Image (cartoon, rainbow, N blue to C red; front, side, top):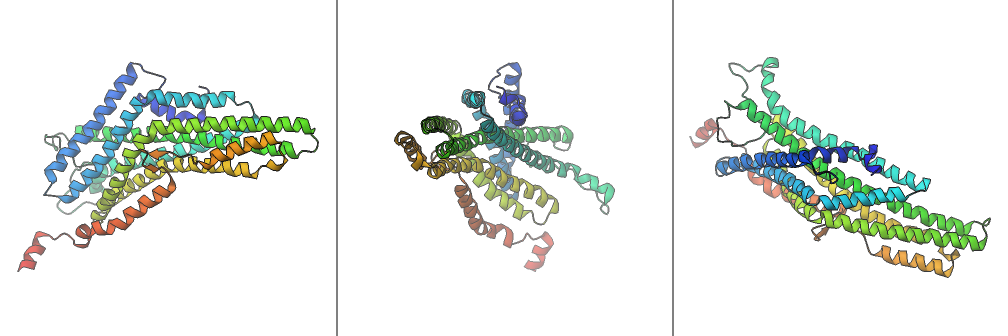
Length: 409
């Protein structure tokens, strides 16, 4: 547990404890917080859906915006329920990470692992700041919009009070403006924290696995150094080479088990989240294009859409790191001075190379690999399909009543 209490893991550990999904706790606070978060997300999904149904056939812009909002909220609800359901598996992953650090007694190997932990920490901070700032901007711009009356007042009018989202609560919105605004702010913030909690924990776990790939490379390079060192007796050198290779194989087997456990923990959620992301990005682009006339909404939805893209990048990048790590092991085996090894050491190298040919990767529902190639194909597909969907929304501008009467005349 020592590494989990270090500075590297502060963000995922604090977030999981705050949200009540820390796998080592199951007290009253955790149960109450799980109920609060689930209720909050449902309090976002239901009003969005109700307003969506009301606007079908009336305002296509609100329909699309609320569809994107429903996908976002549904993704948050899915991630949170998966965290609750998979707590025992998450605990096992943390135990494996703690065990890897606990059994490492080599300074160079520990330095590599800490270096990767620091990389993961920086990524976690950047991703958390990106998501939180997006939520703050998206919620705050409509709230502070009426304050422009004090800076740049309109003639004979004032700017109306607005909500961050289009929702139907079946009550008078003007009479309950501040309580509803607070509710939207709380539900929106909690849903964003759900995304941060889930994604950062996943990224940190994968970053640890990436560190083990580099440790394997270090052990293989040491084996070559022992075999090439003329100052070491040949018998002693062979023993050291064999021992280093044996440790490298053992660690490689550990990495394979870790990747398999990560796959079984996350593969279903990444399938659903990836599908929601793809549809959300397509809808988000439409929303951005339909709000080109409004600088305020363009900024809000532009930032939100960009964050969805960053979110998808953030969940596909760790999968690519796993693939690259597996290839690193094969290259490290190939680059060893294997011709200087004894026959029994060469057998060990062959075993590692054969196993490394078979790629290690994470998947989305066993249907597609979580890799940057998949990310690029999905992004290109969205961009190519977008102009077809925009023709009915962007090319033909809206006409006011006066323009319509003039045209008919």
